Amino acid sequence: MSAFLPNGSYIDIAKVEGGATYKAYMLGLREEPTKIVSAKWCPFSQRICQHWPFQGVRAQNPLAPILEALVVASESALGTTIASAAVSAYDIGTIDHKSAKSDVHTALNNLGLNSYNRLEHVVRQLAPVLGLQGNCSEPYTLPDDPAYDHNPEQLLFSIEYTRDSLTAGLWKEECGALEMISRLNSVHFGHNAMQACREAEESRRTCDEELKAALRGVSTDSSRGEHERELGAVLLFGESALDEATLVALRQVLEEQFANGDSVDWSSVQGFSRDLAFAGSRAMARADWAARGSEHGDDYKKEL
Image (tube, one colour):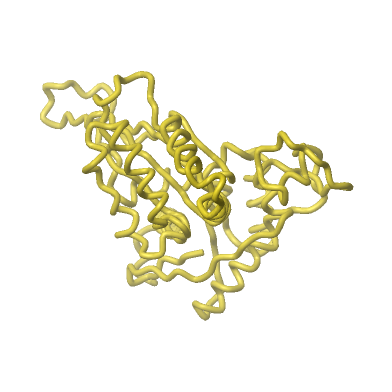
């Protein structure tokens, strides 16, 4: 969790690791299991696969205790009462967005917080903060009008790397609108799993090749010819984002897949958030601040 302060600075406050219930929920679980199910075809870790298949209706809101812990930590660090909060997730396509949005809204409402009834995607918040959104004129503005402006479409590649998972996406951006073209969400390529893979003699030679094959798959865009595409930026974040072995594999794939893969900017997120685990929450803090200023007017910011 991060906060955007009235003087324009940020403070990173806390991160909380959820338990098995929370992690399974984020993969689509809606019910506590009554027995452990052995499912060799489950694509996730055994700790999560014991809940397979992810179905049913969960009795309680698994997000509530985590959000409460973050809010309490924030109020303690800031020495003040938190009035509002905003929540983002990296790959909200892997969960029931409507249900998760309702759970976020309910949990924050029960804490007495204004949540603006939103659940946002990290990349959709990072892009405007990092100045990666193109400018376009109002609709129906003619090209010969001096006010006409239309930045060309660009591609962005995002990757969140944590102890437990790797999530990546190829995005198309035009006129400030972002569309995800393809995505990869895998616990198999998480930092801990990859480290164990690299240390095992029998899999040492293949684990990085499997990772590179997966990254090639998510970075492929059939609408454009290979080596003709260029990336506008690489958005790299997450607690394990600077793992060198994985960065080497990612660099090799991007150099293969994009004309500017060897020179594309990787530094924008790190310049915004020194601890890459907080990149998403920092972007949401900025968005929340902007929303409150818009709601209350310029006098609100002057008072603070």
